Image (tube, rainbow, N blue to C red; front, side):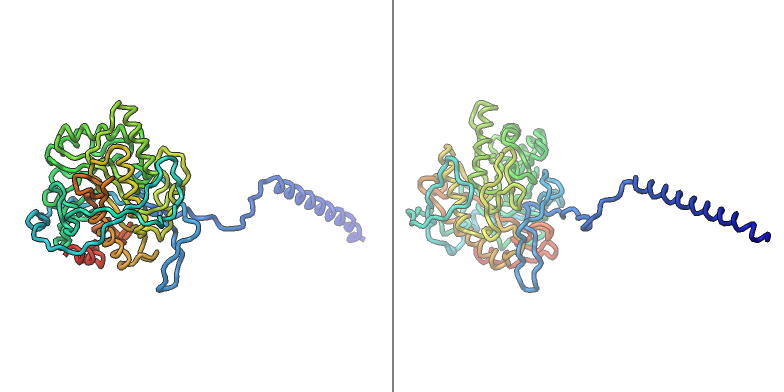
Length: 457
């Protein structure tokens, strides 16, 4: 009987516990439903793009062994910036030692007459107003031949006492390498040097951050210590990861640099900074600089020597190549392809067009130097040493023979170009070693360097 009396109470207790559990579960579920839920993800987070050195190279597509790497259709984006992490290697590593003079008037006089080429023909002019900024077909008609300089056969002749053949020293020092067989006449290393000695050294002022580097006082001191030097004011001011200077700022900095140089050395030769390539887009950038100088100072820009680089790289905002000059609203200029890097027809045309541009603006009587050119694309993009060497020696043929009685420099037999500088002697494998004449690690001459020696010997 007693056990039966407890049964109703036990049932009621179980029912109560069940109701309590139900209420507790409902409360927890309601609270959980009010909490924010994470968004579902379909893919893992994307890593930031890898920075690549300047000028932006198209991203490689992995290839099988023995094949040439193909660039991807969409280049990887690299943040634009001033000359810092993605710029060319800073040229302040190892101080340049004083090299032994390699080219003298005596050695030039004793030089046998080597090979040359037929006179370079003059392409038809490029229209000046509102140029078409896409690549145009090369002319098919036969232009009138230009008359070559009388001394075109001598590959090491001087012009007004100055040597023609130059090299960019990316790592250095110059004295580390056996450069004697190259018969060099001058060099640069993208900076200044108060007492370089040896070969002719081209001083270069940098303009990063909108200021002279070195400052005006130091420039005057260096000019006093190195009378008669060639000075280059800026390096690719049109390229955002090099000196990156808008036209008005460049005009002001050039004015200040010119005054500082001439204060220290009235006999100095001052050259405008070289744009990356003399295309219609970049010649418009130079026009903007010249006009801004007139607006700011009420006079024509005093330029002793004209200077340009002659690469063949894509001009497209946000793409590989040299992008768009600062201060310009264009989205593209010449849409060159990778294979155009060694295109001699384009190389020649750009120089002819630039000389024509100079003549139209009253600068025909000024010398022109090409202070940097070469092939920056990697070997596995289709530029092995034999291709690079063939391109290099073809440029030598062109420089030595290209002359024009209407646009060439009268003080040098109407030659188009008075001095040139190959890129480079010894760049790092992390940047642009394709055109190296020497291996910076071993000091040994490369096949491209040997092709240079074979040409000048």
